[in-house]
Structures are given as C-alpha cells and as structure tokens.
Length: 321
Image 1 (cartoon, rainbow, N blue to C red):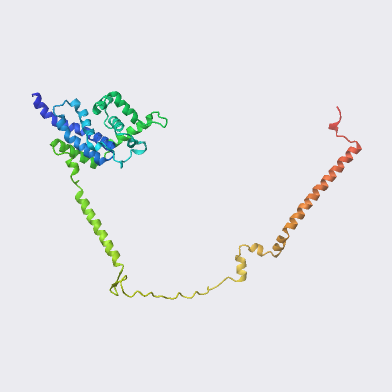
Image 2 (cartoon, rainbow, N blue to C red; image 1 turned 60 degrees about the vertical axis):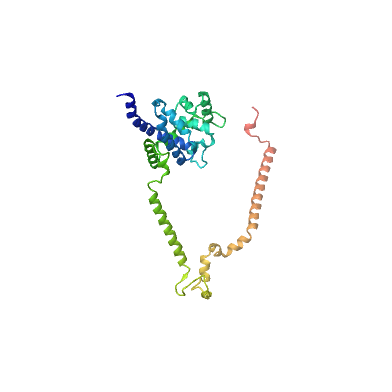
C-alpha cells in the first residue's frame, strides 16, 4: 500500500479518535476561559469544524499544538462572561487576566507541558513561565500556595470527568458534523431534540394560567343578580346587631375563691399579717439581744483575765526555762 493511499485510509479514523480524545478537555478549557458553557461549546464546535482542513498534510505529532491554537483563536474566548459559574471556593479564574488564565488552563485542563503550551501561545518559554507564575494561587503574603493549586487541579479534572450527558451529546454531534464537513457549529445552533416537548409544556402552562385568570374573574360574578359585584347592582351594606353578652352560668363563691387563691396559706393565718407588720421591730430586737450577749461575754472574759494577773498565776508554758 502506497503512502498516500494509507494516509487517506487512516486520516479520517485518526481525526475522529483525536477529536474524541480532546473534546472533554477542550470543552472545559473553553468554558473556564470565557466563563460560560454555552459560549465555550460553540467555540469548541467551531474549532473542531476547522481542524480537519488545518490538519491535512500535517504530522500527527503537531495536531495537539494546532488544535489548541485553533481553539484559543476563537473570538468567543477573548472575553470572559461576567455570569460565570465558580469552581467552588478556590476559583480565582475570574480575577485573572486573559493571558494568565489561559496559561493556567493549558496546564490544568489541556494537560500540556510548558514547552507545548508556550508553542501554542506563540511565546518563548520564559514568557510563558512568567504568565503561569502570575496565575498560580498564592497566600496573602505573596507566597505560592501548593495546596490551593492542587485543589484547583482536582476540581478541573473532576469537571472534565463529570460533564453532563446533554453536553457530551452536543459535542459528539459537533464532532460528527466536523468530520462530515458541515458548517461551523450547526449542531449547536440548531434546536435541541427536546425543543418540541418544551413547547408543549409551555403551551400547557399558558393554558393553566388562562384558566386561573378565568376562575379568579368568576369570583366577582353574582349568579342571582346576573351582574358583577363591582357593577351598579345592589351594593347596600347589611347590618346585624351582635347578640347581647350573657352572664356566666356560675361563679366561684367567696370561700371557693379564697381556697383557689395563690396566697391561701397566708390568708388562712390571721396572725400572719400582724406579725409581718412588726417584722422590722422583731429583727432589730433580735440583733440587739445578740449584741448584748456578745458584750457580756467579752466583759466576763476581761474580768477573768484581770483577776488572774492580780493573783500572780502564770501558765506553766510561760515559765522561764
């Protein structure tokens, strides 16, 4: 088999395999670069549509560099949408400039080496390393934060592996359209397969809303008079006196009321009130009696001490040795 015939046979299958291998990473890179998944998917579809013609006659080793350069050249990726969805708490992509952000995503989302990423951007390796350094997560004091870098890397890889099924189907249709030579992004701009059920659902919702409006209007209709309550019909206000308040069937007697009183124990002791009136006097008298007893005790002790000194008695422990 000659080389041209072999290339003609292998190229379509190789192109399909290559595009299938990069569509997840490319979709996430485009989404995080522009901040919107729909915008990113349209850019991804356009890049896949233009890739077969650009890859014709090019060695397969140069395909990755060509594809990522073609994707980053899409106009939709030049500006970031302000309604982007955050990558958990560690996402600072919206705060980065377009250059540092794409330098970061070429490493984390595309998985390129520094040399390949610099070639995709068309800059020297030192220039790329400078842009990547500006995009690295850092502490408040400016030091690099390896843990934040690792968390961001894990989140981007998780997003690549867990793309929604509807997005995967749209990307697969865009890939097949690109291999068949259809116009850019036609599978993504055409109505989705479930557009008709959605239209039916909207019709049902509008019907229910109209029924609710009719039911609300029916509440103002007066069937007996045949007129609206808001019209010129009989709008007189009817008044009716409230029934006179009746006396209670029974009440507590005086004795029962006293028993149910919360201070019944005090009310039941006739002398309690008398004693409470003289409580201050009795308290003062008790304190005076306690003070007099203490004074008498002190006088007796003092007299005993004086008598002992006068008799010359001495404690044996105080005798000279």
